[in-house]
Amino acid sequence: MDVQLRILRFDPERDDLAHWEEYAVPAEPSDRVLDLLHHVKWYQDGTLTFRRSCAHGVCGSDAMLINGRNRLACEYLVKDAGRAISVEPVPGSQVIKDLLVDLEGFWDKYRSVMPYLVNDEVPEDGKERRQSPDERERFDDTSKCILCGACTTACPSFWANPDYVGPAAIVNAHRFIFDSRDHATEERLEIMADADGVWRCRTIFNCVEACPRGINITRAIMEVTRQIEIRRP
Ligand code: SF4
Ligand code: F3S
Ligand code: FES
Image (cartoon, rainbow, N blue to C red; front, side, top):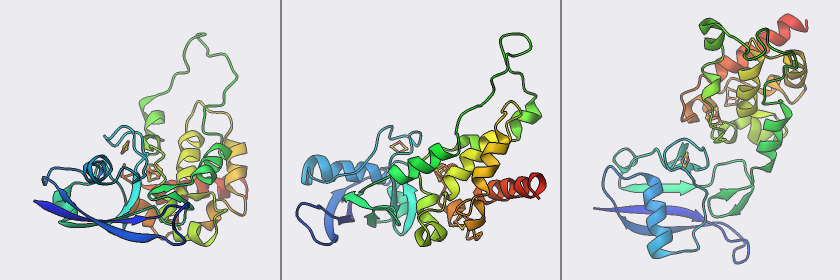
């Protein structure tokens, strides 16, 4: 069968405005939207530009607005997407070309939450920092993030205020704030308590719907908020 694929295209060297282009692409129901994009790029128009790497839902590089919702192109199957599929760049982001958006601001926010373990003490046995299964479980959900940005770019609070640190950065702050081995909780909570931190969340839930890893993002945001209230009354 053929799928009608509509792609919102924009080439800054040629176009003043983005415009839709349509492609008829042969596809099987088990194909992924990423396969359709590859078909267009390899056989129909080599100028089509998008990010992808692993093609298996691991690297987080191919988040796009597909049929009106942020998704990973490598995880969304034709049998679920239907025979008329629209693909646009993720919203709220500056388009560099076609489906490729500028994620520098996203990475700056990610880096701002110190997304790494902070602990200068030598472990008791000189080798490992031990953790019980319950302590590990405490941040298991947020450890699944693949940094695709689907949550932050789906968030209306972020669209309204691009300085909002955004759900992806909060998820990654949560992952270390609730890690019993980490010693930088206070610093991270200070960053989270900033005017553009967790308070900008209006519990709109778009982020949860968009997350390809099924992370309960709003719960993580609420848990970080609660920690701020407990530790910084
Ligand atoms: Fe992507 Fe989910 Fe991580 Fe957000 S929390 S960046 S949607 S994996
Ligand atoms: Fe945005 Fe998610 Fe909060 S969509 S407003 S971060 S619940
Ligand atoms: Fe890596 Fe889709 S290409 S997650």
